[in-house]
Length: 400
Ligand code: HSE
Image (cartoon, rainbow, N blue to C red; front, side):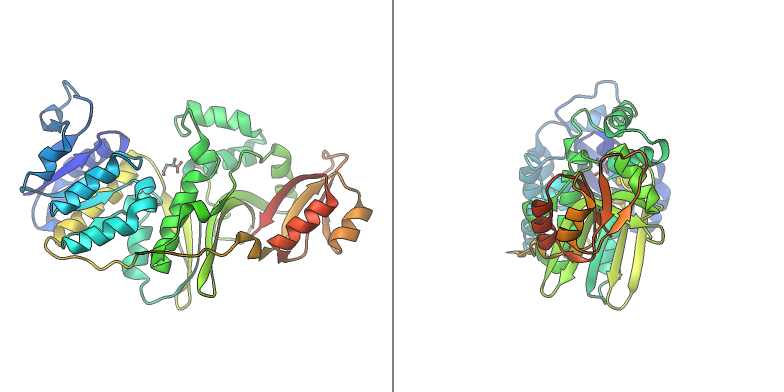
């Protein structure tokens, strides 16, 4: 029996215990031995729960037990998760985590410690929940130079935008519904402001670049300013608004941005609806590939965590090379990115023509007293200058 410990018995941690119990037999065939959860670290006691006897409150109990070979971290947040994970790696245990906040900030450092101690640090569930994107990048797409990763990496906002598109309702209304259904948190900022997707694309960019992409350098806009009118304009253009996290190689670096984008009908992410996530990857040899599935939720996320446990169990005593150096990647200024922009303004057509030149107008009967138009392709920096010159901008959404 391989003995493991789970740190954090919340939504994902309890899912991990359930996945191991439910699929013990098939997991055993893959690892060659069964997996037993020996400890669960939590501040709570879980009296009366079947796991009550496994609960410990001091992480040192796990760190000091030589029987425990693998530790799962599903606590969330940077601290104390980071302290606990470091202690486990230094004690010679392999670790898997679902914690994107931890991986985005300390990924390179934790991989380096794992290498030094000849163990492994894995984090499949930190991006895209149950979608196996990290293993795909680290093991399957290694023959390619990755030119672009773009994805819908947040289920809550995708659910909200899908609802706004299907029902024509406003942001506040759909946010309340998402909260009532348990998709959105009481404090929804991490999702609706794009912070969650920002950490996920920073992790993916670090992996494809092989060095540290800081999430603070990623230009991030959420969906809070998207209105029912914007959605109707999008429909007029036969497009749909999606919160994308996108990273594109430009020379030696990447432009990385999280923002609402207008996608055309033929884009592979166009039909990704509801709480689903999808991540589109373009390799210089592979061409396009897309990974689609449940980006959140207890069991899908736990499935990815337990898949890491199986991988870790197969590699006890052997470090798997992973290129993510701590050297900072200088992310290119998002204003250098080129694209077309959909703009809503109170300015008149004469002024629009004098500032933006040739544009394509989008007529929406109910949007009286404003003009909606699509610019030609230009650098974002040029768009910003022109928008300032024109003034009266009500909205700007990027084309993809
Ligand atoms: N809040 C996240 C989402 C959960 O809605 O996708 C997974 O990171």
